[in-house]
Length: 305
Image (cartoon, rainbow, N blue to C red):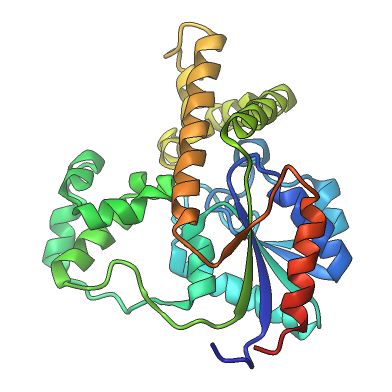
C-alpha cells in the first residue's frame, strides 16, 4: 500500500456492541471526528429506530453523515462513498483524525477498499421491463452472487432500484461489487461480544429505545399521511413497529419477541460480513478494550508504512 496515503481509523461492530461510545472516547483522546457508516442513520428523523447517537454525544465530538436525506429518497452506496470521501478529506485538512464508525459493512468497505464504481450501462427496454415487476419478482430473479451482495445490507433487499441495478449488472456481465482503489491507509478495529452477552445488550438497548418513544416515531410518521412502504424498505424496527401498529401482533409481548429475534439475526449477519475481513483487529471486550484500542492506534499513527 502507498505509504503516502492519509490515515483513517475504522470502528466496526454489530448493533448494541458499544462501538459508538468507544468511538467517542477515542476521538476525544486523539482529536478525531466521527463519520457515520450506517445505511439507516443517513435518513432524517427516526433517531430511536435507527439508534443514532444523542445530541449530547454529538456535542462531545463532531459527527457526520447522519440525517443526510429523507426516508423517501433512495441513497446508494456510491452516493455514500462520495459523501464520506468529501467529509474525510475535510477532516484531514483540519489536521484531525477521521474515525469511520458503524455497522453497515458495505458502506465501510466502499471507503476502506476504495470501490471504483462503474458508469451505468443502461438498456432502456430491459430496465422498463424490470420496473414493471414486483419487488418479490425481482428478488426471485437475483443470482446467488447478487443475493450474497445484498445479505449484509438488509434494507437493499427491499430497494427496487438497487435490485434492478444488480440485475442489469448481471445481464451485462459487470462486476457486482466494484473494483478497488484504496484512497486511505486504514486501521480497522472490531467491536463485539460473546453471543449471550451481545443478545442481552441488544435486549437492554431495545427496551430502552422503546421506553424513550421509538413506537411514537413511527406512529407520528404514519399519522402524517405518509406511506408505510418506505418503513418496510428499511426493515427491522421500522417494519415491525408498523406491523404492530397495524394490529398484526396479538400483544406487545409477541411484537417485542419477534423484533428482538430479528435484531439478533441481523447482528449475526453483520458479524458474518465483518469476519470475512482479516484486516480487522478484534478487541477483547471482556478486558480493557479502550487500552487495547489505544495501543493499536498509537502503533498505527507512528508507523510510516
